[in-house]
Length: 236
Image (cartoon, rainbow, N blue to C red; front, side, top):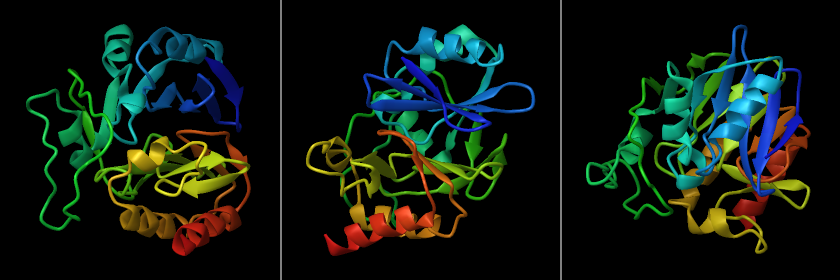
């Protein structure tokens, strides 16, 4: 797993060159954004220890797809007392089968969910809500890729942790559903593209300085990058 410092508060952890998790430094420990692929536990714990001898006290999940929760259960077992946070809507997709509920709600687009939802044995300890501050991160509901998807914004340094709301390929962001042909996987796993676009317009209001996606490199820039991604989606 490759570890790269992206700001005074954040580290990008990348496996196989494509799947990202992030460590965000808090006053007393680290928040881990997403739990990566299965088999990532040892590398994630070791990364936190190497970063100022830190420990992970919170696991904050953008959504419940397999490449974002793959090591969740093993991490909880390894770390012991650790908070696990996800949106209440998305938590239905974190349940182990057969309890998992993939139905849509009456006010949601009636489209089948896409992608792999393997579920987890460990239940969330906290449900994030739109606008709340969890640790140092502002929680922002960004449904579309999945119904309960969230992104997280570090107001200290302007870093937006987007999960799969967008990917960064070819030196620019692309909304999920409009990812380039050479990295189509987010498109195949996206539930409802118009909702992705609506969520992106909401993010456009933030004072962005960095975009840190679930897949692709961290991009330095401003809202202009996001505006261009929105225009690309609107045109296509």
